Length: 498
Image (cartoon, rainbow, N blue to C red):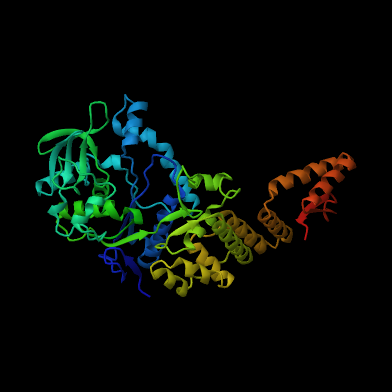
């Protein structure tokens, strides 16, 4: 089956035909690293990770390039950098401010099973002309000025370089907005210095006490910072060139104005009809039926879900969070709730059992399963199929979607090796520990308690040894005392009482 993807630009599902099958290119808008990433930020990362895996499967990993940017150009970030590191160059100061949150983002999405993209450029590295000649924001803005798609104007807050939306015949095609209707856009503000209400900022002058970069436009230096939209136009061109590329992705909220303005900038600067052939957007995410908001009290970060008991009174494994996302089609809205996570957790337990039984000699990923993914990433039906597959195929399919617990897989591999070596005791012990961890018990802690009891027995402190045995039994852990057939020493094993 051919890969078919829904194209926001044409509002239809299309057969994907790469511009060059040996160089498939995908750009996705990444996080703004001002604070820890919330669960809404996780959705596009997971969705386009699945697409990245599928593209690599179809075209070969060396023939797919995935670029996801990091936005570290932001007025709040810039201001904090100036405040905390006034003696450092701006880019270096910003790096100090954002390094912690960027690193945390990487740890969080890795826990969600997401691969790193091939390139992850930071916006600050592409503001001014570069030594390697890659595209940059300042040069791109000057191209728009040279081609009369932009102009310099002075407002109350200083000079701005603005894009003239009337200079592009089909502006608004992605969002299906007519130019005369754009006055109501949330980010649009009619100002006297603008030619049109919909004109948007490419570069904004900074005041004497505001941070910025010295960029030259029409031969004049304007100390300032770039607008929001220009960064993605510059960074996609830096890695894909000035021609059209294959896929551009992001959240539904980015269609207008961000992606609409990206198209305007890139097409007008480079003289192309399209920026990307396919535009893909994932749906919105609510938490417990409401828009996520700190004021409502339902704002939750990926880190909190993984490491605290804030949501539903427990920590949620990364593979469960990933499964909860993929149980809904990427274009549909998600109500992210405790109920949904509990359902995902139950399905994840079934997958863990399949891994243990398979241990984990996975088969080939079934073509019927891949065909569902090729049908515009139909992950809900693919997951339903996965749960009905034989163990070998289920493990292979789950591994393709990165839905398996890595510790469970590692444990299963150890069991497989022990099977080969014929170590029956080690196999039984591995299964017992897996059962304990499924029940929320700490196997290592149980081992320590059993070892303490053994010491009490050697010291003939039978009362304390009996107390430990009875306490473990009350927790559903049954001890078995025996003697080693060779050494004659006492051996104590434990199992979950059934």
